[in-house]
Length: 366
Image (cartoon, rainbow, N blue to C red; front, side, top):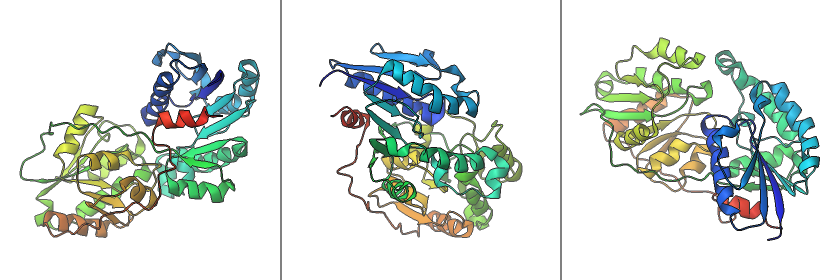
């Protein structure tokens, strides 16, 4: 491979899952370029969080101060920077295609709100969800045709992008998922059936359909069940506060704060059934995690959930807006009468990219 220079941009990926994406990508790229004539420059918010001997870091701390800074960097400053750095490849990891000078450009799109039509409740609890659903759709369009390839995480998103942006150069890059199996089991109350929903409290995550279903359960079923929700307790988000205010009186509901990874895994191992009613995801990691523990799942009847579930027997899909239907499924499960629908993959994944190594092999190939 002849000498190449790649700029990889993740200036807006500062916390949570999107920071993990950035760190994992740079970690894999650092390994991939060992003993290769490839120079890497990474644009990040905070350089102190990255220690890679073969990757040069440029810190851009103002990138998260406001959207005006983000737009300035993407569409003005980066063009100037690209002329200075003169990259062969510019790879944007955060959805938008910047205005740069490079031989090839690539973009990785993983923000779900561009695929989501917010309700008034979404605007009420976090106006940014509504704003982002409009703003991201506009920003995705800018310069998108300049890319050699647009990466998305699922086939149904590829189909949406092809129609919405009138492009065909889209490739599915499935998020790398490493199974972490623990033998530890969280100490849930004995002689109860335990349902689990690990998710950050955003309105589109749709916790309420579960909580309304709990209220609708017959007394004899309710007495034998417990429902566990992470990242709710002590969370200052408006939606979290709303859930606590309106549903804390339910005796079989347990709201947890943030939990460590080790505790999360032990909870997967100990639970009886995953509930996942989110209205939009670009993947849905808890589905993969529950599947690794061979656990039963009740999932939103939506394309993302079916694709993330893949070939699996212990899954049933329900209308994510129908609490009565979910209550019926929970009742059947507790009474050991439920027959799972199961799920079969509908897509050929042979041409997909299955990890960061394959992504970087792809973009660095002439």
